Length: 264
Image (cartoon, rainbow, N blue to C red):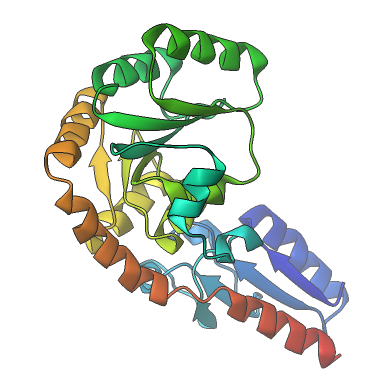
């Protein structure tokens, strides 16, 4: 290659090795979490793409551009929420919450069932069950018995459509998940985030008021009740999200890479 784009620190190591053999090769690194661990940082990197100005607190490199974490093309499409609701045949006056209950879900099935049972009268649920057919059938059977107002999906590539419909989401603070919700200006309760990079991402969320943080199931329930009783909090968070979205310019990465390849 003439240009290498790394999205992981392991890949950067191999990019650096390749640069030693071909000195004209450009190595760009796109950092995918908001708080930056030193393991990402190498002098040999030509340019870093950073998630946020918040990242500068832990970034010790020289050459950088703040772009946000890049997203797939579907997130760039502006959808009309009412049209999407017609498309998915959703009719409700309730707040719509998005739950991803796939294999890597922050909500184990038992917690998810308790949560849905507690709020089935107050919320409409968009539920993603993932690829596991057994998991899908367990969730489907429960939903049918409880007569929950919801739409159940298996694995989907069109997560951006479901995020566009929801009023808020329950997820963990992975870098990409945060980026998706910021770009679509959707509030979330970030639940049981992992130590390390996800807790670092929570610092970004807290700093700019981009969502709510729940460390355990009891806190998740309290925060959900708080949203239901005080829905204006969602508008407050959306205002903060809109400010951050304006700072996301990941299409600039495409311009820079194109410029470098054209210049060869």
